[in-house]
Image 1 (cartoon, rainbow, N blue to C red):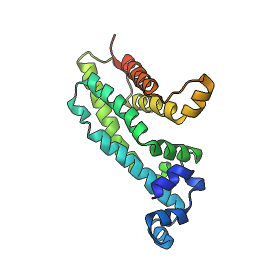
Image 2 (tube, rainbow, N blue to C red):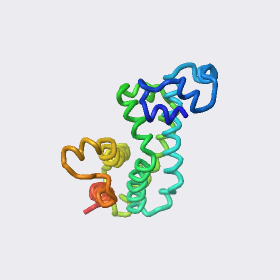
Image 3 (tube, rainbow, N blue to C red):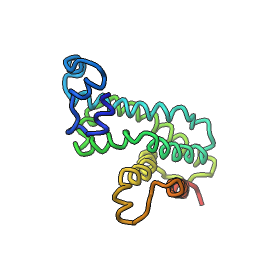
Image 4 (cartoon, helix red, strand yellow):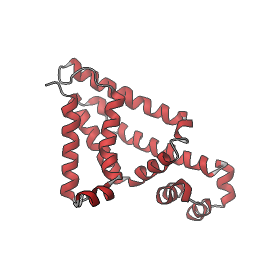
Length: 191
């Protein structure tokens, strides 16, 4: 209920009364467990990150050939953002608040470390086998993968207005995913 409320209204517009009503709970019970709307928002953000990290683990990227692992992560990130638009709106809201909630969360940092370690291992395996070039920073690579998907999807309305194209048609979405894979693999592959 809190995730839906924050995704729809952002932190500023969300109301604990509506969350309690959606959850069929007493508002005091929510404050008892979370102390404040801000703490509840952080719990929602932490769970949103836990969900995406858990889904990434199900890909078993470490068991794939390096090139396929990077492609699969890129495709997964795109699909996840499309299937979970609330993730994008929650991040948009947190960015409006300058990341103050997430910056206080050791839990989020701890759950992101294994992803970066796994990505570093994939990059190292690719470099060792001669498929990938050296010098690719795993954090920068992940930010690039996420950013290519996030920017397009979080700014679809303004991009459509500026370019006069429907960027949400199946053809446009497929073209974007193909472009993302070309950009990411073009960066990491040795030439």
